[in-house]
Image (cartoon, rainbow, N blue to C red; front, side, top):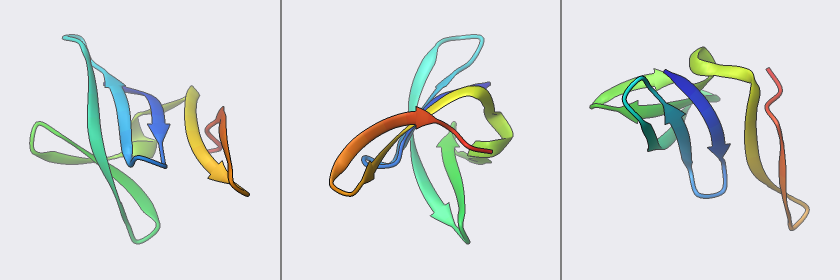
Length: 69
């Protein structure tokens, strides 16, 4: 499983597995981002790579940038 992208505005991540690509809801707990896949919670950072991008809103602008680990 690999996180392809994080949408912090709409609160979801896009992941890929050996079976396909999925969009999963996210939730922030104690400053850490989690996503739910097949009724299990997973830490986003455990499945993110250096190629993962995130969509954020900064100063009223929507920006797509590489995820900082």
